[in-house]
Length: 473
Image (cartoon, rainbow, N blue to C red):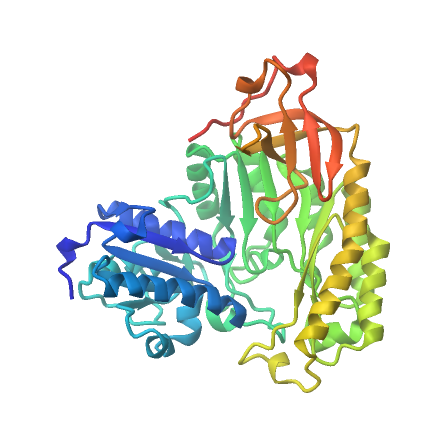
């Protein structure tokens, strides 16, 4: 085992969802605070850390590829230590050591505060998969710990960040592995969320994307009577330096009227909701244990559009779940065509070990599942392309994310969440290319569309009155 003093540089691989990304940023913050230097060159790193995704078995392939590459570098003497963290560790634990015996240390999702000991190679009180309170864990009023995500080294651009409201889930969907990996719902107290939000804003973030496994149930585990609507109003009131607050991962069965009103009334909360629905057929929804019916879903969606004019609604569906008939699939196809979601994703059903639906009879062949995915996405494509064309001629606000090789700026409107949605390409007018920079909020005019994406330009007469809300880091 290498001496802890011999580990000076680290390379870090972060895989999976934004919740996992926040864990990566927190671990990087701890490592940097300990004096370790982060490098992007894996061949020059003393230690390599892979924060894995384990939500689906398919994600294991990507994680194992990164793990084996790190072990190869260690075998060749270019790396002294390989540490594997995250959901895959929590899900499979020591089985990983049998598949990849070159791993030096496993760090489960509840053990991230011990990442320094794992990397340094010093003795650690943490056991793989154990539940321990570290320096930045705290207890809420129920006595459960929650993840305090302050003092992060962010991997996102400076101008936007993910703000975790809660972790874990109590919903118990029949297809999902999250409760077995991440545990029960654990809400952060409002004051801790506000403190973290202020820290992110002070670091330059003007857009905060609110995340959790089930954001709609926020506060139910800590007896916070105001719930999600109270949190949204508190953030809207307190965060004067933040321009956009975006709500992700809302659960339809828990969506109350006051939550819709909070979205409508709060100036900083963008009129956007990410609400995975998974299906629309009542029999399939019951089989999935979604605790919601088609009628309830349609009532909620209609309320959102009526009470929050212009709201963007994003969702995801699962195609080819066990026993899904052709008629049930076509019911979903028609629903997608008729309702007209702004953004939509589709996943083939994955029979995950340890889940109720993974054990069900009537599993559908992979080829058929993929064919159903394509049918659903082609139906959505017609809707999305038409929606993009309908934006031509509108003036909208767009937040600049980067610049492409052709010189166009890549930005997003409030209807476009980072990484998962379409983008807006902003073409600078002659003589104005230097007037734009990353993190700037612009008023642009949509001139065209290209598939899902928008093409826009700066109105010439407004070119000298650009509103600056952030700067490149």
